[in-house]
Image (tube, rainbow, N blue to C red; front, side, top):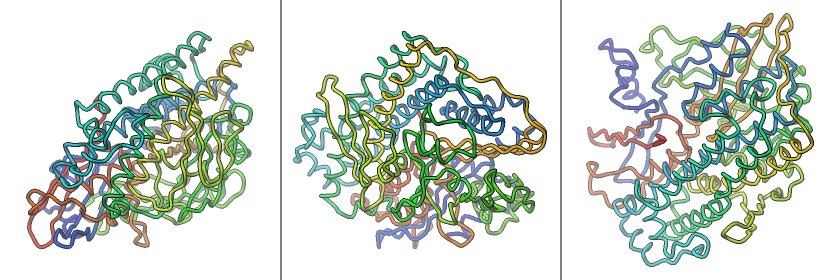
Amino acid sequence: MQEQIHRQFHSPAGNTTEQKLENIAGELAFYCHVDLSARKIIETAAAATKFRGYESILPGKELAKIGLVSSVASGICGGVHATASALCLEMALEMKPPPLGIQVRNLLLSCQYLNDNAMHLFVLAGPDYSEAIVRATNPEIWQRALQVKAQGADIHRFQTVADIMRALNKPNGALYQQALEMVRSARKAYAILGGKYPHSESIVPGGITFLPTLAELDAFNEKLQPFYDFSKKTIALWNDLFDFLLRENPAYADVGRTSANMVDFGQWDHHQYYDASYANCDLWGDHRWSTPGAVIEGKLITTRLSELNTGLEEFVEHSFYQPWQQHPFLHDPNGNPLSLHHPWNKKILPVADPRLAAQAYSWGTTMTWRRHSFEVGAYARIYISALAQKIPPSTYLESTGHSLKLRLLKADLPEQQVEWIVPQIWNAFERNRARAYALAFNQMVTLENYHIARELILGGETHIRSPMKLPPSGHCLGVGLWGAGRGFLAHWANLKDGVIENYQLAIPSRINASPRTPWGVPGALEQAVLNTPILETAFHSADDFQGIDIQRGLQSFDPCMKTTARILVQGTNTVLDRVVDTSFPI
């Protein structure tokens, strides 16, 4: 299949890479070589099809406006990029935000997470498990769903598993429609404190620009009240659906299956500990409301932000970039060694002619941690937090070392205690199940931060922003170790004499869709789909093969890119294009 990919990318006809890839209709072309008779996937390759050179436009820009530029790296997640940029410059310029500024940034982050998780579970991934899809691809499963009672019916009100599947139909299913309303609630709450959504200008280095009143803070909290019951229902119905499918066919456990290798920087800074400094990043990182960490083969390796940062490397052996040779920073600000391949040393050097890059097949780079391929996602926040037992003292959250316990408050439904247990097998179902619990986790972290912000305002706090300091001469390094709804997000900056000399970003979807490592290990998406069995039963030939198992594996990573699975069928000349819906409808 590698040769076919290269023919697609390196056609001798003289067309540009972008022009040739218009036929694939997407920013991620995911190639699968399948053997339908053996019902297995032989080979995979994740090919990011477009050059995204945001980093190249940031050097030389006015420091106060960096966040406004970097936030457009995403059309829907501007707030998280603005915050990552703010954290990055706060570190480089030694700016500590005031407590109220930290708290409001936390609340705005929560809105984006509630928005993204609800959208993914019911608008993007949800339809893959709907009546319309299951009846068409696995009619035997649909017939069983009609007969099986839903265990969580007293919570979510759907009497059978088939009722849940009907509610996931796109676009008229009850859950699909309700999710759109929840997304609107999250965005309206964001606008109360942030002024507008998605590209708010209220997040800046040093804090925020908008001083909330007590009435605005309470209105924000009121707008998010519906998530209490929505979170309970979400957990119950996804547990019902996934448990049912695994009982009907245990082979579903292999759909999207990978080793549990993941990295997350933690989220929601604690106002009593965050000082923006790299010297103290391990301390304030450990006090975040979700814990930073790296998990390899299901084992927690570290929670130290400095180790997470220095362990990262980017490789370009399978990318349309030239390797950089300069190694300006041998150590981080704490004296820890930095690889040549660390983002602080990285340079953007596209190849002059992609057709001549013989081993390359993607505009994405390969990011590793301590030379391990890894994945990122909303689920990593609760996975790592559950293992680490470092969540700040909370009325609503408890980490046990093997699970995360959540106290969900009474609304129309009674108060409920739920527990997410770290799964033994990591796959597409568990990614989405964890996102269901992440929705509740986000809600309870939001409540903790709301109470803190309220106490600050009642105590007369009005300081929301520290002034930007004059940049010192020489080199200053900063890194914003943050996150987006789809997983970890980082911005690295090198300032020379007060001017941006180099600026690098790592975004979650490009990490999950990484090409192979230099030593041949597939990226997370590549490995997950390679391990996926073909469980679809209703096809008779390649012409009516839907590829739903492939789609479920891909969609479990919540890719924030237009995605097309290009399926090459073994023993035929058939090439099937299956578009994975990753677009936000509002």
